[in-house]
Length: 333
Image (cartoon, rainbow, N blue to C red; front, side, top):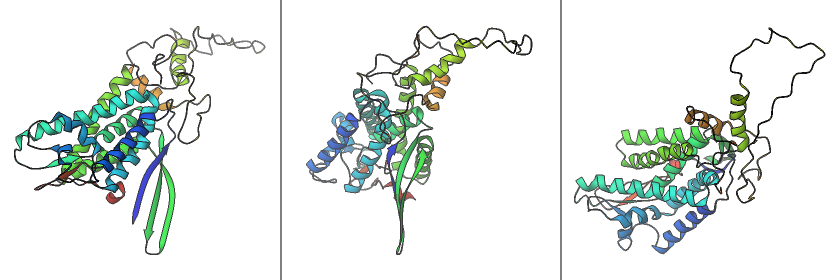
């Protein structure tokens, strides 16, 4: 037996996980309020297939879960990827992204199933929204790592420990896993990938719009070569400096970028508490270079100076003839 779960990240974050914790609490309260898993009493909260359009279900289906393990797995993944995404855009933007991905995916799912009248299937769970958040984290911080705990047991031999994996590799692995599920005929994989398909373009648009907080010194590293690069390249051997003459001091920028203060809130990390000064995270540098290749950086080098700053969760369905049951990530190992 082997299972694992992510619980921490080293990604630089600038906002406390207010909305992430709030969503976890809301999901737990909803699970208790509706009496646990799917029943006839709470069937109206699940997303109905082939039974018309029900906008309320586009929201409510993201807060119902099949059983305790389904809920627990979802909340673990929401915690670790919520840390990364909310940590870079703040609580209200994160909440809007999370709900937007969940509602948007549920809407498309219900529209697509209009061609299946009388199928009597309902789906629910936070997985689509979480896959969207995971995709956003993978785009904004693919080189940063998440720390996972694991438990392995074989007979009387039991081993526990931790390991680190990059967010990009983790997301790629789960996308590949769900593609395999889809090829094997599981609609669960399709529902997951739909959530990721909502989150990925949203992350790119927000990055291009400057709505994502990266470190100011990351942007300074981008600006420095652009400002100091000569218009004409001159060989260093053409006019060597005399041995007793020091090289000129590089000209300082007029408006050096500063680290975003975000109401003077400290930059926090789920691992170390405070990111050390001078740390340059290559993730946002590379992303910014790719996305702003044809544009000029704004004066001062800030991305957005005005900002304050999965378990493999499955969407569970109820009712014959089809059940889309989600499993914890370890069950796929």
